[in-house]
Structures are given as C-alpha cells and as structure tokens.
Length: 230
Ligand SMILES: *Cc1c(COP(=O)(O)O)cnc(C)c1O
Image (cartoon, rainbow, N blue to C red; front, side):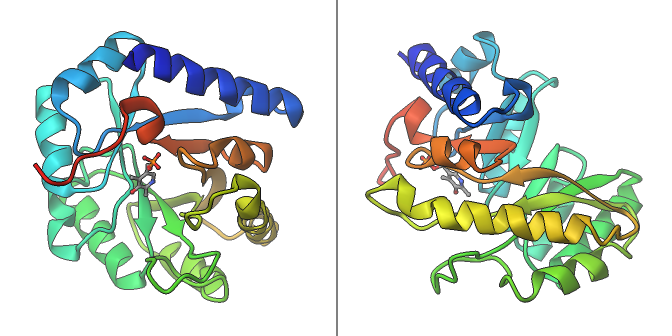
C-alpha cells in the first residue's frame, strides 16, 4: 500500500516534470513521516526512499537513532531555539528558518559541534496570519544577515501554501517564491547559493513542481491521514 502510494506520487512528479520541460532529477520527494511509526518509514526506506521530513525535534531524533544512517533528515517544522542543539548534527536540511535569532542559534551550535548546517528560509508568501515564516519584504534582508554567520549556509527558500480545494489557486504563491529566489540569486550575495525551493504538499505538489520546486514535502499522499488523537 505505502509503496504503491509512493510510486504514484513519484509518477505524478515525473509527469509534472515532463509537462513543464524539467529534468526529473531536479525534484526530490521528501516523505513527511511525522506522527507515523517507524515500521512505516522502514517500509518505504526499503523501497528506496532516502529523504524523510519531520516537524518535531524529539520525534526526528528518535527516528534518526532507530533508522539507517544514510537517511537524509529534513526538519520542516517550526523550530524552537532551545532545541536546535539536538539536531544540528543530524539534519540534512532545516527548511523552517524564519528569524535572525533562530539562525544565530543554529550557527552557534554548528560552530560548537564543528558541523556545517544547510538551511532554507521559510517565507510566508501568502501572508497568512496563522503561518510562520518571514514576509516577502523581509526575505532579502534576512538572507543578507544570515549569510554573515559562520557554519550556516543558505541554500534556498521554503513556503507552506494555504490549504485550498483547488491546487491551481496556489500557483501564484509558488511563482512568487521562485521569482523571489531568482531576484536574490542575481545579487550574488557571499555565502548564499540558492539551489533549493521547497514547496508543494499532498494537495498541490504537482503545481509546485510545474513552477520550479526542487523539494516537495508529501505526507498524507504517501502515509495516509495523520491521527493526532493517539
Ligand atoms: C505536515 C507537513 C507537510 C505534509 O503535509 P501533507 O499535506 O500531509 O502532505 C509538508 N510540509 C510541512 C511543513 C508540514 O508540516
């Protein structure tokens, strides 16, 4: 079942790449495994999946300890500064950096542990009040400030689009994030190399791929609905 779901999502990504003239290798599928038990992760790991996304520090650390070390872990949820120290040496990419204070903490812990941490800046492109992320006005300045910090490297941008019935409604936000990233790339800021755009979830990942996503974060579409009551 899970492996079928995974293959379906992968197939849809491939088709979206073809429709938009992109190379399939440009897009990586992150299996968002939050709340799901380890055997479910193992099942798609065995099937070839190496990128997993989690939104809670403790859960990420527990799964990191339990599963093979060639997994690339993505921290996609809001990150509290006092928990940064537990993950800086375990994650492949932190998608959810939205303030200078958080970036400073990541940098400090990375220096301490002598690691380099790759991050994305989370942008609240749609300007939803309920969402984390910096505003589109803040993003350039935040990028320039974070770029000065040691042992942290900005690799691109992430957004969480609104929940919508029709995924086409989110296209404008994906276009906007891509445009922002192109504008910033042209400024050639030291220590900033924009390679990644993390956008698209179960409801809208195909549209996101059409508009330039390099990481899509799919949970429900692979693992089924999440149960937060247990
Ligand atoms: C949970 C989550 C996802 C996956 O959501 P689905 O709709 O289940 O695919 C993607 N990105 C972030 C930041 C999330 O928290």
